[in-house]
Image (cartoon, rainbow, N blue to C red):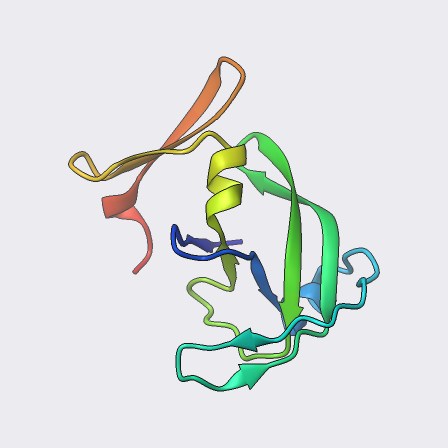
Length: 116
């Protein structure tokens, strides 16, 4: 599954259709409201806690806020700054690379070759 890593985001977002398709853990209720970029307000359906998110050979536990919106097929998930911290992400803008690390192991992606 493709995802957008957003340094400005403060939550991980998952469309409800994606949550349904993967039969993920039961949602925890929330009183959170989200203000979207078009200034509209959205109420999440719930929070999916400790979802095992696989990137290459690595698995990360991630909490997703599940919202009922039409997913962009190119990037159905949005990962926030805290996920990038957990995965010890290194972003080299000059080289166009994103490196994720766990312990002494690392996986590097060439961002110039990703789907646009």
